[in-house]
Image (cartoon, rainbow, N blue to C red; front, side, top):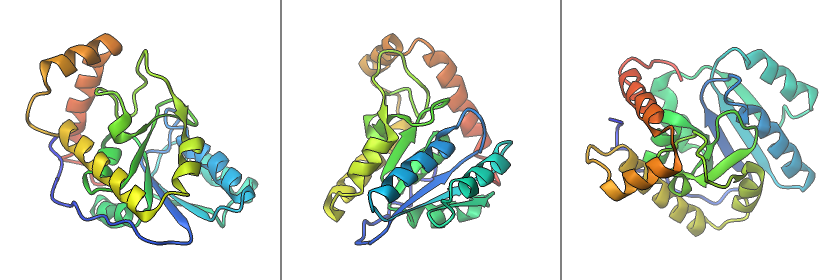
Length: 220
């Protein structure tokens, strides 16, 4: 993907509140937006200070807003609605942690933001941070790879030092740079990815579509 790789300027910071940001469509195949409520509620019950900002639009936007209110999480989860693409960098850089998938996850990681990749059609599923994901996945589920829980990883991350968070950001940035490079992947990596993920051709087509969409994307 031909994404802007000039914004390598995220810096970890001392903070009393873990600031999580998600940017993307609010739709059925991205149920992690609703899983965010499970994570936040559990953290609040454990007296962990957290705030999760969700940006996006889609056919489940109204359901998400209602779910936030119904669960009494309005002080901890904010649904902002559609985000102009021109504001993406500003919003992502304000996060301690980015949670998402697809192009948004790649762009956040390219700025050095620690990026946890959610899985499509899964409320809490993940393979981990971007650098831990299979070569062909930026949110796609891959046969033969073990999933873990967004909740477990975020709980652990909330206790990480500034230095630990910074190192994760660097690893995510390096992984995003590899995924968006013009250089072809080594043959052995491509071969291994094909063995582990039979649908890699479909993923390739999807990523090509992302590249084209990047030229006309005005809202995330």
